[in-house]
Image 1: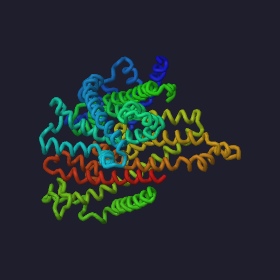
Image 2 (image 1 turned 90 degrees about the vertical axis):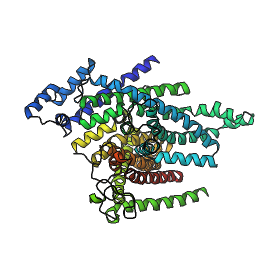
Image 3 (image 1 turned 180 degrees about the vertical axis):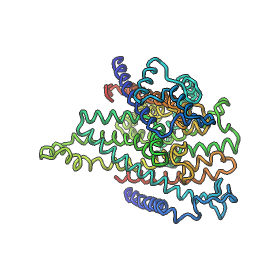
Image 4 (image 1 turned 90 degrees about the horizontal axis):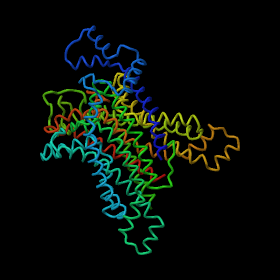
Length: 313
Length: 266
């Protein structure tokens, strides 16, 4: 087991190199110059000499391969660079934003589980009855609704019209997390409910369910003890994908609600060409990708020991 | 019975999608006003008989902009889905069938793109191509083909083991012939359904990038960027956000329904 985990973690290295190199090349072929963006940010006109001085200071005057090697060298020493805009060390900046994203990830995942598992099962049990149609229509609507439209509608209704929740910002206690959580959870629940319904229907057809019914086991017990347990693989797959993308920071929801997480940090950095911040974000995304895949495979193995842990997924 | 009902549903949906595509294609001739003409005296007008969806902050007619926005968004999304499904299917089939180093290489590249955040790509491509919706399409294409490649690969791996493939090999077909004549027809259904169900998602992703300012830029009539512009006036003029939002919801819903129906038919 330990050997397996180490092997999988080693896969992180080529992905990290590939992905950071790709970002570097892409960012440096971009026609928008970071120094020009900094100039715009200060609101003052800089002379060419001043710009060159800034370039030299940031190491932007060197060739791309040299810059990349410098960056890798510094990273191995634990220095991820400083933000062009705020001058803060980017690692510190990133770590201060991360808790907000984790907080939002946890609340929206919990709400999604609480909504979609009962709804999915209910919909399957009441197949082709009114409850099923109703749940399916809701889930269809949720699936076809763009996240930012949902966010703006919720904001309009609950913040602007009813005044229940703050319009934006992450500084007003529990109230500020309600709308971002709802936005994310509605979209995810719509998808989950549909999948869980399909999986449960599939399971209900199997012989062991017929057998249990014939033996007189109560329907509720069959559902919870057997069917739900057998549907766990689907649920875990869905959850791992969602957690992966949520931990990357949901750029749109975080920017709409001014939620100070890593997604908003990334959007801001991208719009101002703050390369060191973008690099930290890209590294984080690669780590999440590898870790989520690894953890999912291990959970699969525990849920269904027939699934073997392979070195190449 | 079931199939007859599905067939009727399919025809109705096809007609609706046809109307949508027609509107999108001939948008310029169908708009009641010029979507780009400013009329500052009439700015931020409420929805009325003259302006069904109201006007935006420059007095431009929202209905006209929403109609033109259909052209921008729907055709970009269709082009995007076509590019990624074709590229992904080819790469996935080649990797799955030939295996070995080719397969390893394709899968490692797809890992790389899967882990790569779309936003970063969008802005990088935008920088090279001087921005706009085209770069958002290219950026999304770069990261989204992986889904089709993985699906086509796993499907190919299953089909490859079938006895008729062995028979084809014995009768002297080469790799290319087997891929085209024997493997592709067997996985085409799954790939088409996946592609159709992806149209709605891609419409939302493209509009999302534009919403963040990483795709279409003003004054271009595009649903995502129109909604982003209306954000700050949500309190006083909600129609600027709601009109393109509903248009988008209806469009995505239509494509999703069509995709579901096609899946039921296959």
